[in-house]
Length: 212
Image (cartoon, rainbow, N blue to C red; front, side, top):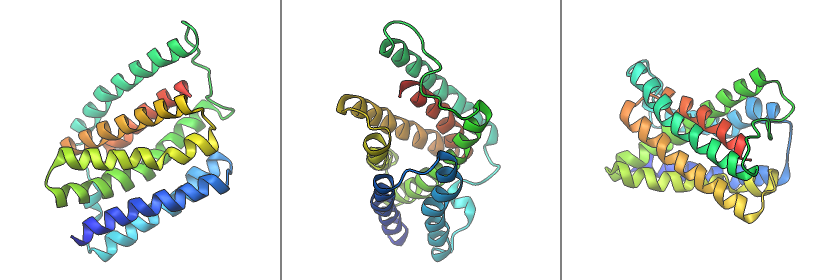
């Protein structure tokens, strides 16, 4: 019960604190992802982990099931890439625009930031929140749906305050985000290895950039 309450409290904390941050500030992406997000997202996780006297392996940080973790991520990641290509093709009037919205950062830097972002967010949501909710509810599907819905809600501020999407684009983005959350929890539940959702997150994030 304690870990379940901690997981719900962490999710609410992220919605409020990260939401207000997105509303009030917009620093360079490198600063946000490398410094601010780990402080806001990861420090509470390790504080709670210590209070629960749990090991870091309870977050899926392990070398077990390493190859299945990669296989699951690549398999489901391929689906997200194809999905994004279709959306990109439709959005740009029947032609691909793969240079859209990638930004000014070099490709390698952007890819590195994607891994940093994925590490912070997946450790927090799949490694901590999902596993605690799943353990308490004893129902993988229900835990997946509930945490993925909250995952989508946490991304509302960036859709409106940072990217300033119109309502239709924001709803599509949030739907895709929630869908990804379900896929990420699914692969994590199969492998119990946080590498799987981290790799899937990177494969998902680039399609989202192409969509945006």
